[in-house]
Image (cartoon, rainbow, N blue to C red; front, side, top):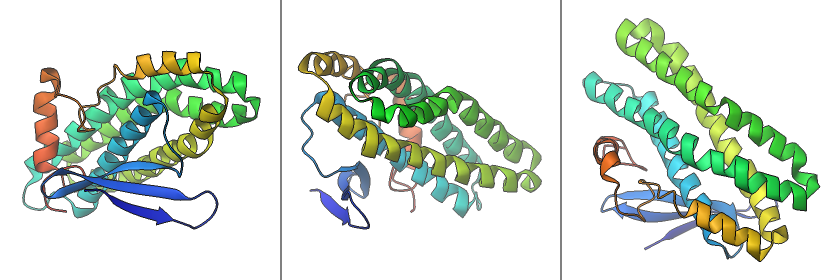
Length: 230
């Protein structure tokens, strides 16, 4: 079963598609222009963006709710979420966009060069940003409530930044890629992105190396990414 929400604020139409991952959980599976996806790599990028968007929103929900009477579980899950963001999107997804997708799109459509420059700047600073957030989380956990406001503020900024980053890719770069890239280029991109196998997309067998991380996040994090209380 899929649920679809159409947002008609301004052109173009944006569609949010939800699908069940577990009996009680729906995650955003697409945030994209209303168009047919004809290439495997585009579908994978959309799916990976959706997993990350769900992760970011769940993380923000946890932060806004606070640790309550379960601080150990609270900090454990947030650490796992930040590790996932650093480990998967940061080391597999973004580098392939930077080295394989963006250069091809810029060559075919120079008009997107400014957007690509902004996205490349985001990618270049991605590891530093998530590591800073990890440090601020550890400071809150170790030093107490006096360190909470700084983490909360930085976490909100980080989530807003990342969602805007993906929106720019989805609404500018990917549509232009679909219009301008050749079949040969799509074949190369498809082959590269098919190796990603995001463990939170729900479409691939779980890599044993990530089993513990995946289980920790899914069983304890709130919806839309996990089975915990929303």
